[in-house]
Amino acid sequence: MRSRYIATLALALSLAALPLAGLAQEAGSSDSQPLDRQVLDRIVAVVNDGAIMQSELEARVEQARSQIARQEQGVPPDEVLRQQVLDRMIVEEIQLQMARDANLSVDDTELNGQVRAIAESNGMTLDQFADALEADGLSLAVVRDQVRRELMMRQLQQRQVASRVNISEREVDRFVEQQGTSREQARQALFQRKVNAEMEEWIQEIRSRAFVDKRLADA
Image (cartoon, rainbow, N blue to C red; front, top):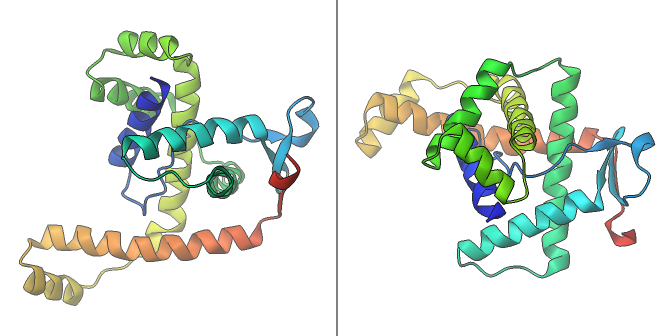
């Protein structure tokens, strides 16, 4: 059952936030932990001054595997899937570090509203949602933390990526003429298209600037 609510969480976030190029990842991961706090778990990647642990990676791999199965798609080999998920987690950790460095934050009002929206999207009250999460081995506090991190990344993406996008009236006119949409629909479609391209470039930029030491082969 856990994957059902994690998937709903990711979907609700992606719908509620600015539509930025599909980086609303599964929200089921934990924050990477400072290196000096790691004692028992095994490090699978060092990202600047943080670390991603094997336990975190395995949890995300299992979520990804469940999501792929629900979509009735072929699941890639375990090692391929682990590498893909780890790469995604590395990019997330870089973004979270950037957000913290920029003093970005999510206030409790916004956070509470988002968590309530997720509960309602599941046809539940907040109390019912908390009970369902507990039955799945999760807690509302954990989910709140997951949502907070996702919203912080969205803030960063809006500041770093959406601000790069400009759409001219001529582009809107051309799109309306070709597609027969309204001007507002044209603006949204053009914005998403440009953001997709900008996001790919931005991800490559921040990834290349970060110090990353992948240790998956040693795990």
